Length: 634
Image (cartoon, rainbow, N blue to C red; front, side, top):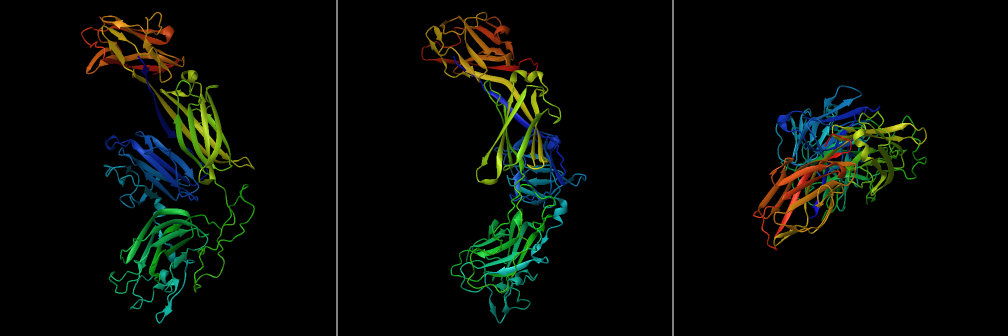
């Protein structure tokens, strides 16, 4: 008989509270209200104003990470929080609170901004679910959607940026007739009347006929980059009813968010062939140093002009201007000014020079590039099998070429771990497709035989704190730090069963295998007796004793108890051990053998119970519980 057994590992993680000198802190906590079944999966992404937009703040999992009732998801501080996205694709929904604190103020809920209901609802109680509903919460984020949340103060700051002082419109060419000069600025004059010549009209921008890819663009007020929530386009509409609003229906029209160099950061297409007086495109609080919004026809056939009654760009200005140098000059920033000054004009020169384009070189081009200071825990894994080298592995995304240091401490993130129990090592590697960041792998080697007597063994779990610091290469000052408490719950229940079933011969039972390792720690076999504990291949006859020896192969793990053992053939099962006790003490015996770190079971095989035809087989299976050496905990 061959026995196998999985050693089941359950990994949990809670975040250590970390308040840096940053201005805005985010706190996400799983609810403690049992009626709403709060425990479930959750992904959290934070947009802190960096060039990558929303970035993961919680560990990676197929559906996210699973959080128990009352468990802290994260509490982390940032220089600025533009928005937070939450998502869960699993039907096991999560519920809790999502709150922020600005400059040390009392925590207050965020508000629903996109893909959640109700818009503007406070996230004191929010449910995030992969299904169609979640009961008993104030705000719902359903069907696996990524829902955007913003600070309550931010919600009130959303305005039409195209109408702010300093915003300048331009277009590829400009049409002129008896209706006047149809300049690009007409599309941001506040007049949404789409009748080109009609009463109250003369407010529609118009490019020249014949262009295959005409465009219109608004450069937002200089001095800031922007978060964009939506772009609303009012079409030319000659009869005022919407039926004549067909100026944008004969081609693919794309709305683009661009940075100061004209790079496309995000885009949305207009619905092809759909006649609408107003198009409202949602960008979900996109942030990526947005400086301009461009509307372009991509494949007009036949070529037709681009005509716009009004363009409204909704969002808010970020607090830090890209034109202003940081108060402390970064020591590892490039020293050379870029040789090409961004002009934020399209790469293709229009056939006709725009009459109303700005003539001055933009003054808000960045003069410095600060390399990434990203520090994010992306995944955690564990391996506590017998021959494991590193028991815990943590992967971080950190700014490329940053100096770093790693500490492993007790779960309070301040007390040292019992000497000699834990040894961390670290290394960095490139991330494919990401030139700004590197992957930091922290491997943690744990002496398993010392766990039970150390201060990382708490309530039947391995608990420790991983601290990572990013430091200035010049001053040595800690610029970013991240503390995470890691919990590993070891489940010592081992299920074992025969892989190759035992064959019954007439009157005898033969064993196909003499021994086999169960998940590296457990060995089970037919044996001579409990005194010798030697595996054998002896033939068993009717009413002979079946001797089974089960033991741990390593002193790190001890047999705690045998919970069950049974023999099965077809629909018949002979239960020998159940709930740690013998089912029939008249034909079976069970005893622990301390010298072998094991347990021995002997039982008569009833002649009348199984078929002994040579073509039949039987399976022996059971459950054994282990415990760490020196520990009373399973």
